[in-house]
Length: 177
Image 1 (cartoon, rainbow, N blue to C red):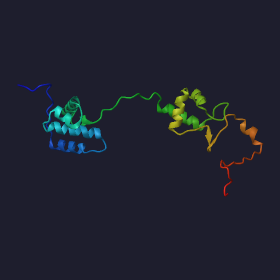
Image 2: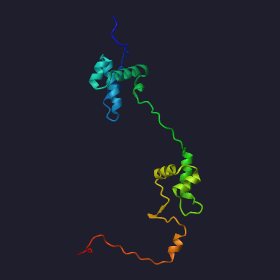
Image 3: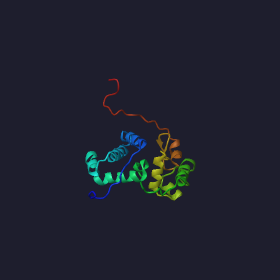
Image 4: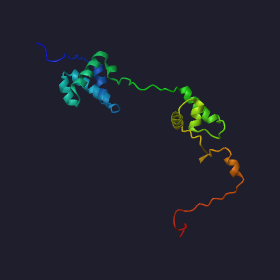
């Protein structure tokens, strides 16, 4: 008479597979892979899914999953599967165009690029332009550590005025007293 529940995949390991699983079980860099290797080793030693699950603090379906994957695909079956993610909506060519325009061109009727002017120029949103600038550490409104004036005629208006700034110490007593 057969056992209860679904039949489980029988695991017969070669010496090489056992050695590679033992190395993987000791891996410190990828704890998830190490756990999977330990699960497969315990299953190959004859333990049931419930026993392995209790030993490693995982569920019995998790043990069954890794047992089946190893039986079907071997060691590559224990690797992480690629994760689905949102594909990039803006290609590298568009990003390169924004960076090149920011560094090499000057906007019409303005002394500097703003996010809005670059967005209008590139056809992207202002927030996308901001993300691109942040990624490449571009700050077109700052030059040599100083913020540029938005008005291109500002330098002409201020250029002839001799202004001397005096720094006022925030402390109450002059230094040295």
